[in-house]
Image 1 (cartoon, rainbow, N blue to C red):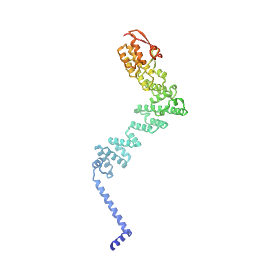
Image 2: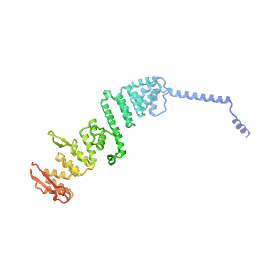
Image 3: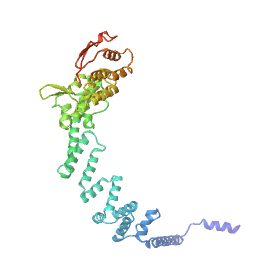
Image 4: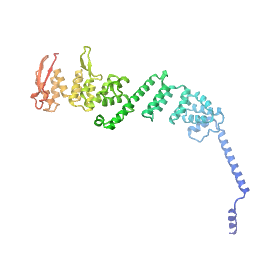
Length: 411
């Protein structure tokens, strides 16, 4: 018991300087032995074995490869084994351990490594390094597209416009290999130059409570919309403006070289939505060689009927344009699909197809306007070249229809 007390007391005494020095020396020696052991462990591993360790997820180190040739051997082995992760690991080690000029030169000699490195830079948004690589490779198109993305992503309004203008001057203008892309970017710049002042003016009018914006509130700002959406917007809110105005639909059409079909289809959708039927009809007036006028739709009147029906236009308006479909069979099909009953009845009467008309009448609601019209046509004696009148005033509830005349051609 006395010895235990004496031993405990001895342990509580502070260590002497000589004891501390001895312990520190022992620790340092152990560290040297551990480091030497590690060095011995890795120093015997050839480059190919290290690459295999990377591929299999085993512990590895690249620090033991000090010479440039050893490092390049590592890279070549990674390329031979076709492992992207190993290639990137060695490339990044090379990048941080040799001169930049030497790194670039050696990398350019290994196209596979270049592509893996480019993909790595893309994933990590290393834009500056990526542009350097593209420049060294002479890949001007890739560099230009990258700068274009920088100019458009995350930027709006005036900031995006300025970035696009700089991008165009620096990377696209004057590069003959990028002529088509340059034209597209120039058109995008022109569109923004149009949208910015129009949006600014319309925002002020909207806040002021202008009637057109109060009656038909804007769903979203104009800024950043594509060309066709811009045309629709201008046709909806600024249809009557002259061509010298930025907000004029005619100006949008001319500047962006839109086809007749693109223009008419878009304006039709806008004006029909507003129920501006005279504007809709004016879209289809076309002059003939003799100076007359005829109704013509670049996309076909069957498509016009489809659009008007989708918008929810009145039946009489849809029927009016269904009657303008030239092909008789197509007119019948479209008329039946969109329930343009008067058009179908008149077409069947023109064809003198009594059986089809009887079949169609059987599908109509009894005593409806269209049912009485079909009934009256069926009662009429239709012969080639004859005229006949249908007095719809005599029909129940149809006094507003007046007299309707049909003329039939002989076959």
